[in-house]
Image (tube, rainbow, N blue to C red):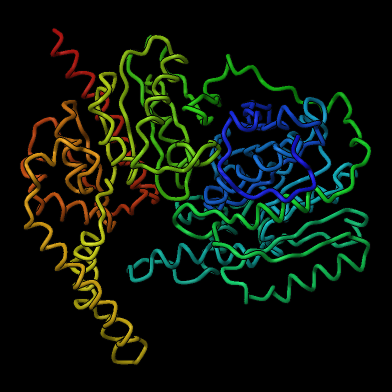
Amino acid sequence: MADPTRPCAVRTMTLSESICPLRPLLLEGSRGPLVGLYRPPAGHMAPLGDMLVVPAFAEEMNRCRSMVTLQALALAERGIGTLVLDPHGTGDSSGEFEEGDWATWRDDLRRGIAWLRTHGHGCRALLGVRLGALMAAELAADDAGIDRLLLWMPVLAGKAYWTQFLRIRIAAEMGTPDGVKSTDELRQRSIRGEAVEASGYPVGAALARQLDTLVMPDGDRLKGKAVAWFDVAANADATPSRASAKLADDWRAKGVQIGVAQVTGPLFWQVHERAVAPQLIDAATAAVLAWPVSAPAPQPSTSMAFPALNIAMAREYPLSFRCGDAELAGIVHRGAADAVLGVVIVVAGGPQYRVGAHRQFVSLGRLFASHGYPVMRFDLRGMGDSTGEHLGYHQSRADIRAAIDEFMRQVPGLRQVALFGECESASGILFYASQDPRVRQIALANTWVRTDEVQAEAILKHYYIDRLRSREFWRHVITGGFDVGASFRSLVGVVRGYWRGRKAKRQAIPDNGLADFDRLPLPAKTAEGLRRFRGPVLLLMSGRDLIAREFDEVTRTHDAWKGLLADPRVRRKDIADADHTFSKPEAKAEAQQTLVDWMAHAVADAAGQRR
């Protein structure tokens, strides 16, 4: 048996190493079903209790999900279970993000605590992440049974956090004639009762007002509770903020047993690629194991017991399935009872998991299901809630096959599937689709074909040239608000990459090169994947996306792509004002309707061919 006092290094854990399989569940929320994933203590450990995760806000929830899974695995191996429950309108749970508000989310999480106390191993502890740390402290202040808090990079005040969130919208619209100019302007919209959208997340007026009032509870309300507080810094020389130190001192003076520590690692809740901070997992695990063992938490009354809902009756439900030694997490949306064609949404790139940026894949799955197509969304190995080594899109074929196998077990009437993926996922689909006769058609959004040389060429043509034509750029140059030296050095690097790419294009691929598919350079490999797949293909392209422009450069100039896009089975749809993830409501709606219409046309064409 593992020594529960030994620090636990972050590593890849498989089911064969630590038997702590996911238990997917649905709980009844006040406004609809809530999706939860419970990872119980490992089978070889005596249970020490359970912890509920209070998640981060909006896109930070996506970016933190793999870290939460790593923490849950580390704790499970030491005898502590973890429940990740998505509040209403977030993650996989029912509802829209715009419907969410602070009180509803608090109520949903209380239901998770109640479930752990009646169906798990009790719940004395909460893990609060970013803004979720503030809510976790509120929950603990109101619940005598919660006496342990693990806080990651806690947000101390909602107003400052909300201001930073609104600035994302301002930055996105900078330079546009009708762009928002101030956070006050957006706050006034909330006061008028309007939802305010940023990064694809529409925040309802009630939640917007609530965010401006949120502050950490006073230390008097947390007296006697144990708090393990962790901040993450990119380098060891960084110092904690004065506000954090002041609050910690205040809590300590009022009887809170608080330990504050800073660890080094990537700022994973901010970056646009999957990132993990092993030091944080090690330190947090050690802190939790150092909490004293005490009597079980008080049990709630019968009226507060929330049994899991019947998954067999649900329109959409969570599940887990195997891919080798790894356990993958997924969601199934039921479609028509007699459906023979379903949709698998593959999610491979960036820090997101199966819900997608701004929950785009949740809404897409629900839209497909409303038109009769069953849908499965899932996390690749090492992403989101799935275990195993993170291998990325280049090695996603086993994951996609396992997902299709499980999908067809869940929906026995299915005969064929359509695959949809965005960015790196689209490339992974091209590597797989021709090898599985069950794949009838594929839809690819902003397909990833980037190499260093491809990126350099796209930046040169679609960034530097556009800047030279911009009045705003020349105004910055004239007024001195422009670092000429740094920009020149950057330009030199881009030009060098551009000429390397020009040279590479002139190098012919050996005659036997196409036979060794996996050794082909990415532009040629994606082209060969499309060439081998003979079913209908939809290319969905964003007008305001560098990756889409890189795809255009590759398909226009590389020999491997010659003639491919002219094939009648390939259809292309451009959405002029869309960014990479179609975050604007209008672009998102147009992209999703295009996908549904394309599915209907493909089905109609297939029916006509059979006749």
